Length: 335
Image 1 (tube, rainbow, N blue to C red):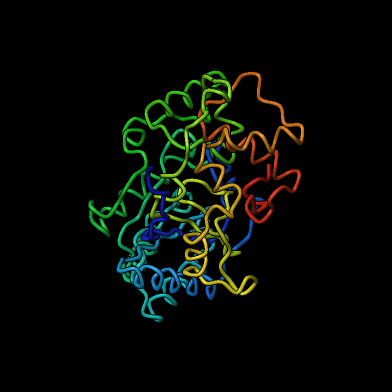
Image 2: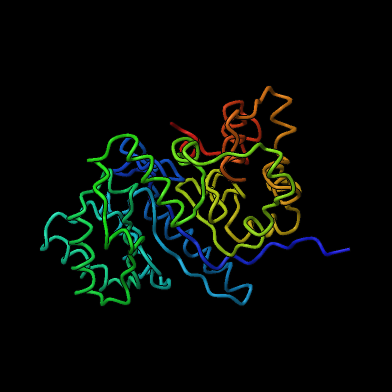
């Protein structure tokens, strides 16, 4: 009999500085948008950063923290304040900062911001560039950001996601609905990715579907327990790296738990977390019995992936307040 899966030590963590974003991408797994908020304070960011480093150190590992959102550049003053406070607290430099580059509206502003981030120790800049983001962000902003970042930081410290789209971009805003949907399908064939959050609603239906039965037995032990990557939002909700909306635990004064304490509790008895237990045992298909008892009906067109099935069931359970300590926060399930 094989040994039960064990929880990996967390070594990579992204801090969601906000759910706010100037874009509302169809593929956003945290449902970012201009009407979102939930901003992380400087003090909270530094506390979580410190606790993450302590957790990794206690297990003989090294923590690498990145800053994400939403759009972390949406509040430039706060972003800089977080980096300065982390530096002053003796924390390791930020591994990377993610951005859609919508703020890069002229060369002077762009270079000045990148030079300051470089001085504050940012190791890499990750710039989103794809058919989804370019519905909202002018390509010239992305091009300017990439050019200036390479000049300021060096080519090796600038990552474009995705480079092939950057080289051969599509003006998504000029497409008809049919052309847009075809472009979305082609993008996912080229770069398969998670179908959670808004993507489960707006993108997954464009792809071929299979009945829920097709995903029976496709467990998520690797994604939930084997991954060394987590994300944390302003409320201290800790999510698996690719599964925002599944709360592994909450770190902060409201629970009295540190990041390390959340990890230890989960490592000791992850079976007590009903969503994690079901997904580790049998994947999203194992969430169906609870949902069916409450009236859940399967999508007639089926599901594009096990993640699509999971996201659709969790949305149903969230709306009925089932396991609110595990399925949340509202920001991850809002329209």
